[in-house]
Amino acid sequence: MNPTTILLCFIVYTTLLFVITWLTARKSTNRSFFLGNKASPWFVVAYGMIGASMSGVTFMSVPGWVGTAGFSYMMVVIGYVFGYLVIGNVLLPLYYRLNLTSIYSYLETRFGFWSYKTGAFYFILSRTIGASFRMFLVVNVLQVFIFDAWHIPFFVTVLIFIVLILLYTFKGGIKTIIWTDTIQTTFMLLSLVMSIYLIIDRLGLNLPEMINQVYSSTYSKMVFTDWSDKRFFLKELFSGAFIAIVMTGLDQEMMQKNLSCRSLKDAQKNMFTYTGIMVVVNFVILVLGASLYLFAANKGIGIPAKTDDLFPLIAINHLGPVAGLVFLIGLISAAYPSADGALTSLTTSFSIDFLGINKRTDLKESERKRIRQKVHIGFAMLLLLVIVWFRAINDRAVIDKLFTVAGYTYGPLLGLFAFGLFTNYGVRDRWVPFIAVLSPVICYFLSEFSVDIFHGYRFGFELLILNGFITFAGLLLLRKKHDLK
Image (cartoon, rainbow, N blue to C red; front, side, top):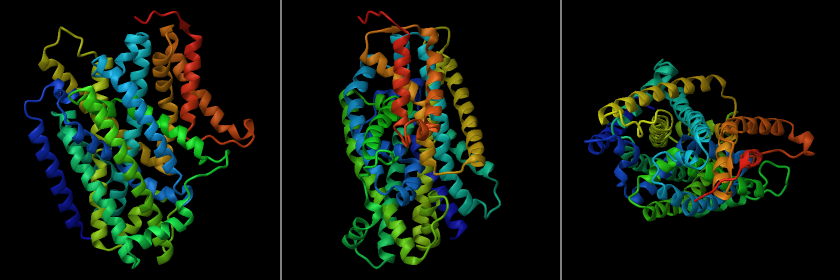
C-alpha cells in the first residue's frame, strides 16, 4: 500500500475530528467537560457507545478468537443483554436520583470515606489498564504494518496518538466525545461490512452462500456443554451479564456518557437502544471472524501464532489495496475511542473523587479548570507509559487478557455496589480497602490451582462473579447496623 495514501487518510480523518472538536468545545466549562451540560441527545449517545465499547479489542481480537472459541462469544453477548437491563432499571435510576457526576460518590454516601476511595481507585486502575490494552492493540498493528517501514519508533507512534487525543478532548471533554464517537462508530461499522463484502467477492460467492458456509463450518458452534471448559455456555452467559454490569454500569467512562443525557428516561432509551445495536454488531463481527478463517483455508494462508493478527494480515496482504485501506480506516477509527473516553473519565474521577474540586469553595471556576487540565495531561502521559510497557510483555490474545484483568480489578466494585444496593447494612469503613485487596488475591490463587482443587474445573470470565462474591462476603463480616433513611 502507498504510505502517502495512508498518511493522507489519517490526516483527513483526524482533521474531521478536530472540526467536530471546534464546533462542540466552544464556551466549554467544567460542567460541559464532565457532563456535557446534560444536553446530549440520547440516540447520538447510543450510537456512539457502540464504537466506544467495541474499540480495537472487539474489532481485531474477537474475529481471531473464532478459530478456537467458535461463536461461543455470542453467549457472552446474550449475557450482556441481561446486564444492560439491570443497568437501565437499577443503576441509572440510582445515579440520576443522587444527581451524581462521579458514580463512586454513591459509595461515600452509603458507606464512608474509605469505601469511596477504594471504589474510585479500582476504577482508575481498571480503566488505565483496560484503555491501554485497547489502544495498544490498535497502535501496534499500525506500527507493524505502516510505521516500522518509515523507521518511526513505537514510542513516537503512541505519543502522536496520545497528543492528538489529548488535544481534541482537552477543552470539550464528554461534550466533544459524544459527537466524535458517532464518526468513529460509523467508520468502524463500514470497515466491518466492507471487509465481509470483499472476502465474499474474492471467494466468488454471494451473501447467502457465504452465510451457509459459515453456518456449516465448525466455527459457528455457539453452545459448549462441557462444564469444565472455559467456553461452557452457562459460565459465559452469567459472566457476560456481570461483565456488562461492571464494565458499563460501574464504569465511570460508560456511565458518564449516560449521565450526559437530558433525563433518566432519555438515558434509559439510550441504554436499551444501544443493547439492540450491540447484539447485531457483535454477531456481524463473529461472521467476519469465521469468514476470515474460511478465506485463509481456501487460499492456503497460514494462521498467525497471535490470532489478533489474522484480520490485518488478510485485509492488508491478501484482499487488495482497497481492503487494506478500508481496514486501516476502521482501525484508526478504533484507536481514538480506545483512549478518548477513558482519558476524560479518568480525569473526571481523579478530579472529583480524589481532589474534590467540585466541593472546594475556595477555588474559582478558572482554578478548577486549570487543575482539571493538569490532571488530563497527567493521565495522558500515564496511558502512554502503560501502552509502551504492555508492548514489551504482550504474549496472548488481548481480549482474554483484558477480561482477565477486569475479573480482578472490577470484582471489588461489583461486591461494593451489590452490598450497598441489596443490604441495609453499613460497614466498618476503614477495613474495606483490606477486603478489596484480599478478594483479588484469593481469586488469583483459586484460578491458578482450580484444576487440582475443583477436579478439572477451569475458571473463565466467571472469575469476575467469584471476585464480587468474595468481596460481598468480606463486607458482610464487616457489617454493622445502618439505618437507610
